Structures are given as C-alpha cells and as structure tokens.
Image (cartoon, rainbow, N blue to C red; front, top):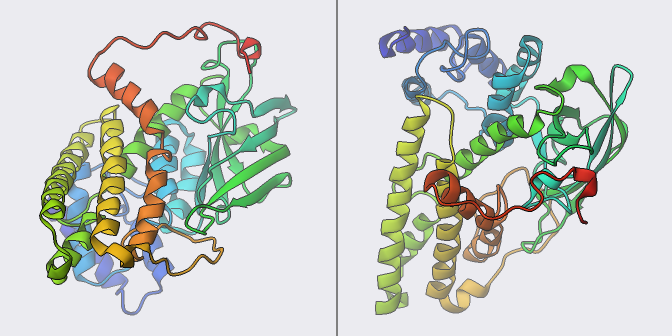
Length: 393
C-alpha cells in the first residue's frame, strides 16, 4: 500500500529529474502522468499508483510548493470529471492507454454529446441513431448544449441502437472523433453574449466498434457513471472559504460600506453561511468518494450549487445598485472556460441562470434526490415499458 511518505518521495524524485523551471509544461505533465502522480488512485500505468484517493492532496501540495505547472483543470473539466472515470470503469485496456494520458495532460479536449433538442430533461428519449455498418456504426442526429465542442478532439456520445425496446434499454455509448467527416459544430450564443455552448450535427458519421464503451444496448448504465461524476464535479468542487461566488460579494461588502443596508446585511449573512455549509458538505462528499463510486448525493450538491449561485449573484447586483446593471462587453466570443469570479457582477448574474439547466435540470435532480436519497415513491411513468419507436413525440 502506497503511503504519504512514499508519495512525497516519488514527487520529489519527479521534481529532481524534471525541474519545473527547466522543463517544458507538457513534458512535465507527461512525466508526472508516467510517474503515477496524475491521479494517484488510478491503476499503475494509467497515471496512478492504486493509492487511496485521499493521498492526492499530498502530491498536489508538494508540486504547488515547487511551482510546478498544473493541467489547467477548468479547461479540460469534461475530460477529467466525466470521460476519464467512465473510460476507466468501462473501457478496454487499449482504450484506457490510448485516451487517458492525453486527456489528463490537456493535449486533447473532450466534450459531451448527450442532450438533444427533444431529449434534455428526459435524456433516455434521445433519438440520435447509430446503425451497424460493417465493423463499425453510422451515426445520424443532433446534440445540443455541448460545452467545448468547438475545442474538442473527442466526445463521449450516447445514441440509440435499438428502437424496438423501451427507451432506457436501446442506448449504446461511444467515443466520437470530433474531427471526423460529418461532424458539424455550430455556436449557440447565450445571454452573456458568448458562445461557450454549441449544437452539434452528426451526418453519416462513421464510428468504429473499437470506440464503443460497454456492451451494445447497455449505454444507459454506462451513462449513469458519467452523469453521477458530472454532478459531483460541478457541485462538489474543492474551494477555499469565501471561494466561488460568495467571495466577490463579501469583498464588495467590506470595501464599500456606503452600499450597505440592514436587509442586504441579513441576506448576505444567510447566504454566506449557506455557501460555507455547501463547501463543507462538498468536502465530505469528496471524502466519501474515496471508498467507492459517486452516488445520487452529487445531485443534491449540484442543486445547492445552482440555487446559491443564482441567489448570490442577484444579491450582488442589488448591492451594487446602478453599477450592477453595467456589462463590459457583448462581443460574440467562444471562450475556453467559464470564469465566474474573473468577470464583473453583471456577467455572474447572467451566466448563473444556466446553472439550474446544465448538468441536469434542477427539476430532474429534485426527483433523483427524492427517489434515490430520501426513498420517496417515484412519479408514475406510463412510458416505462413502451418501445421507443412507439412513444408519442
């Protein structure tokens, strides 16, 4: 069993053989992966050492103190938080060795081709079709709300392979090359003026069967691993006290006493406490992950994340008064990441409106928490045993 002392020794050996000041960023990240210090809980040869997940902090603190570069996790969050754990659990050995290293180093960006215009909240109703074509599959359909599709080399994709069975049973999970013929990415301009989201059209896209994850028809089960990890990565991010959206509001409150009112003070106190409770709950959730796979509790964290962001950003706009109505730039941009704290209050207010939609709508997550965490009776579902092709549309 690898312990903290051994990890410190391994990290210091990496730093000695690849001094950050004299080693290119990508070379250092590749060496870190090969040394098993990328994600220590992954197996040996795949960026890890089979060590407890909790010991990752030992490596990270040593590298941070030495000024070593990181892999810019916000830019490659979909790959790290969603694609990687799914590939690790369901991928073949060849798939793991092909995809995980460039994914972790950030050489290859990933996106998620799940939601569709007619299958967002009811994701299992998706209609993108994958049909057997020799040694592979031919895929046709449309996906929407795809973050980073304009940057991505690879995508995790779910498509319908059997329309004659109930909707949850006829889905298969694939890895799609975003540079292949037939893949078209179009920007979706948002209320912020930017287009971090996209719609993706798939027209006779050929995917070899070697890029299938899991069994044919078992895609819904594979997708659950992705979705549970997605909600943990969104709602359970590690942040310091007064990190995230509450930080800028608290800073403004301290520096601008002329803006204060009794009512705003009471609301700020309540939201500060709730933000701290959510932060600590997220830390507990991450510790629970050490012992196993993420469960439906991540849906509760994602719910809290969305509600708090929207309430805090609304308070910030009110606190700033007329200044809160200002917005710096409506220029159409296609950013590489979402920067909640590096922009002004108006951006935070507008962008946070999407938090209750992305990563699973709040309404759907409330159902998940009610049924899978609290054990309440499920809602009636009349389409549960109906073949997908017979569903009303």
